[in-house]
Image (cartoon, rainbow, N blue to C red):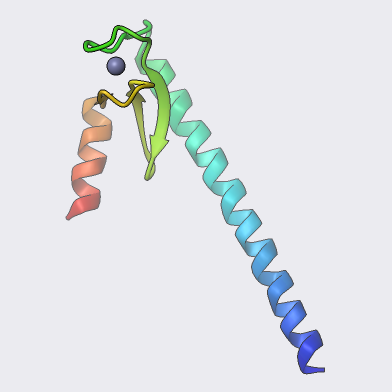
Length: 86
Ligand SMILES: [Zn+2]
């Protein structure tokens, strides 16, 4: 009985983790769509000249160098980042 209960508990945790993962994926997608709506051109990294790639890191949408030279945040994303650190 205890084993069954543990397995059921594990199953519920798995389902909950999958739901949270799905929610996070949808939320990240929404953030990227908002970013695309604001940025109308392809921006290039000022260091290596490669096109910046869309990324969502910690719930913040940004454009980042694929080599890791840096990232570009708009004012909305920067405000969200500052608020999240308080
Ligand atoms: Zn670069």
